[in-house]
Length: 202
Image (cartoon, rainbow, N blue to C red):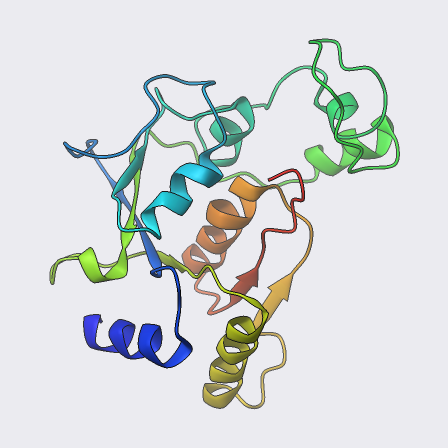
């Protein structure tokens, strides 16, 4: 895996390292993590793994409530999420994001989401080059510019020229795009890539 990763980093001139995700029973020592839940967005935390850090997220350090939901630690995001995602005043005093036209549509949007199975495991993100021989990432994240993204799409097409459905995209929250959707594809055995990070708030 390291040989392929080194080749890819070199050929694509990636500024940031590809990041692998694995789940573990216990949080590793000496990792970057939030000290408690509700203390930030996990997107920036995961991005630090692309800069060489090892990052861990567990049920006690999930960042914002949305991350706890999208990672399978909670049953719901928070009361009033339909207002937060649309345009009406948010009961808990947060500024709304205006991602969805109305609270009714936003409520249906969230309800339509199929969550990950509940888990007590720890999500560990680290550069793929840091994975040991007996470790295998469930998913791999690439932080790429437009030209590098085109090259990644080309490589997928090169290996699967008859399948035009290998690369998917669409709006999703940052944590959903970076963790949930790719993990769901992998666990279903669907060999797909998800082009995400269209969450302009992040």
